Image (cartoon, rainbow, N blue to C red; front, side, top):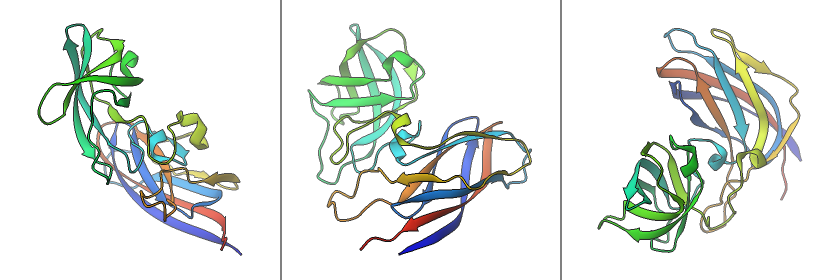
Length: 228
């Protein structure tokens, strides 16, 4: 059996930065139509967007069902890189970070730190200050995301491995409308830790111009096959 799934999602985002927007869809199908338009009353801005089949491919998104969070700062610990992190999401089995664990860091203000790190010491009781090896300290940095480098279901891949629709630019005040895309996809998010459910989303990496709060609407249609 086959069918068509259409939906409109409202996205509350921030101008001038990357925003990861969830687009619920069937687990696999063909992306046929995608329309993105700013709908708030503020000044209209240009915008760019890319569609991925995995949340972790977004610059500001972590994979699902793994230890993950944000990096608030990066400093110097006797020449080694020391990260201050926030643990936003903890894997259901309750795993905590430990010496020898590998974490993947992305999106920090110093590109050299955006790579795999190995934890060499836990430097506070809460486990939010850690020293790593893999890249020596070079300069202070802010921002970014971290996650376990050993996701419990699927391995990490570069964003290009999860590209569904390449970068599109929308002009201020206009809808960016794409029809007959014919982009086949299969969701590649980590499944629930029970492995009994298939994740069902595409992910829109939306970068509006300007700054401050913005609201967009995303309308899309996919053609899907039902398999029993």
